[in-house]
Amino acid sequence: MKKILSTVLITSSLLLYSTPSFALLSVSVGMPIGQSITGKRAGKDYGNATDKTGGYFLGASFASIGIGIDSYITKFKTDGTDGSWPAEFDAGLKTNMTNIFYQLPIPVLNMIIGLGTGTTEYDCSIPYCSKKYDKGSATQWYTSIGIPLIPFFDIHLSYRSITAKNIKKYTGAKDDNSGSVTGLGIAFNF
Image (tube, rainbow, N blue to C red; front, side, top):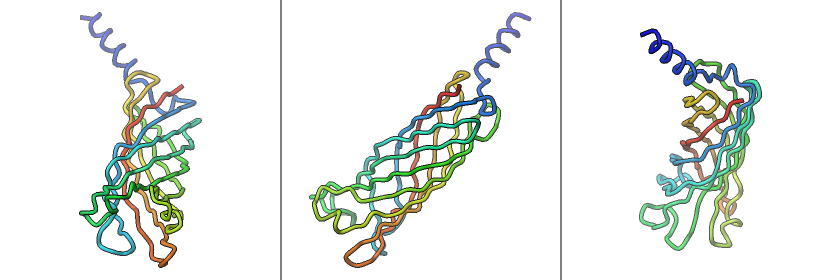
């Protein structure tokens, strides 16, 4: 009985050991798994309907303070039936962010809160798209919760809340591409 109890105690302490307060250096990589845009196009009642999202999230922290980079493109539905982009367009929203974050010293979970700033722009297959729209500014707050699988490795889920506006050059009206992004990633803690 003592051997079983000792084995369970040692195994569980090894599996649940990794905490942010002990990690001197942490490196993470992730990818967006979906984006939802709740804003309106040029003040109208319809928004940009999203289809697929692809890109990456990178982060590195030293002693709980870190910096990160987000770069991803979300393709729009282009069938023209929902008030979004016409079928002949290959359109999407390109987002680039620079982040600063803090890794909370919570035992058993790796929790991060952060802020970011960057740009959004329409990524279109037609030549006049870049002339029609300006690059817009964007800000975000985000959180990530990681569960350690082994002492120096965790898998995490992230949520980003984005405020983004693009300015339409020819009319001055603004497209609001605010919304949220969810992501999945892994982190290595040294």
